[in-house]
Image (cartoon, rainbow, N blue to C red; front, side, top):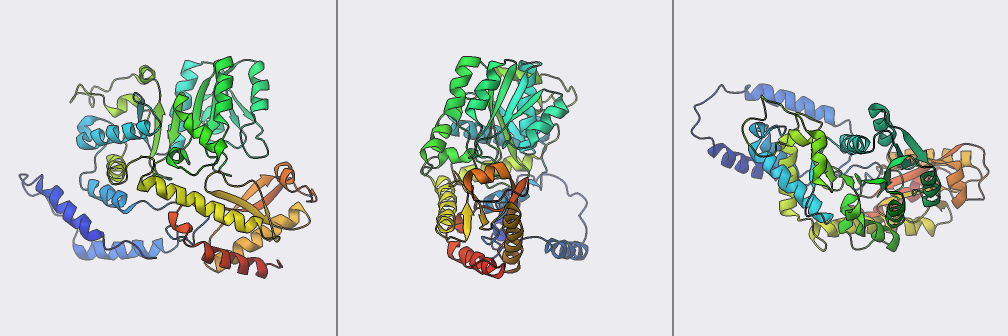
Length: 451
């Protein structure tokens, strides 16, 4: 696999078309000479060699997905203008494109009305959602699973909101029985459900949580930063499918286009079902909000300056790959899940390995068989290093021993956590590369002492 260098010619063509729209401007000062630019860019290319090959199917470790070529090109094209989507005056076209792109994401969830905007990433998006929740349910506790992203606890610390973490069940999901017990004590204002935990890809049981909301009246926020686009996938198992089918009933949701949405970092998105929450954001900036009576994105955002190029890239990607079930974008999500199922099936059939639950999305956790928790952890680290030396890049994840022994009761309990191997198979090409991935994994396992 090689870089998509040929498409740079399309960028030059588009840049000339963009330049023609400003042909009536008088010439301005030229930029730096080509020799200096060439020298510095050569240095940049050299420095960037010090990276794992995140763009390649043999990178099967962390949650890193290459942007689509149209996103890269549209982002670079917008940089000739460098719009700022805080106010319409700073990004007229890109602000309109952001509103259109965000409306398409809301429509994917089934929302015809909404309030939402892009953010610098999922952390800021979740911060805004919990800030609104805290304003609406002042003084009440926010509850999340122990498998929810750590950002929720940190955000609540920043906002000084009371926070309660509930232990997840053996499948890594929010434990509904524990949640019900906590709700009976009262004082819960918001529950965070995660549709696609970043550690194990678990999907919280949203229908059951919605049933509890009917009884207890809490606000329901969904963190789907990693997996929200799987609402379009047609090959989910029944529990995950049931959760995604009900996602339109929640109060707020976060999705990161820079994960499965094929966007460059950083591009998050926060959405509220009720547009009336915009009153909580209300403020004025008389030196920026003066060029239009239309809504400025800064009026519904805690962030101020934001790169309009991110909105342009997202708009272009959704123009090329519409967010519809049965489309090319959805088909690629389905291939990612197929790759995860294929890896899981091989691991489960091989007596050298221990597996956790089958993947609900495209994350797989497993470990080499050993007699104790400490032994599993040591062998996992050996295979991780051996695979990397052979060009396959995996990830490591620590799992509470209590969780691991629920799946692997034969393990001797001699440590608090067990280190497992983890793969996020979020590139569609992972499916085609599964034989190569397995061959390298087999070699690394044999080299580590596995039979």
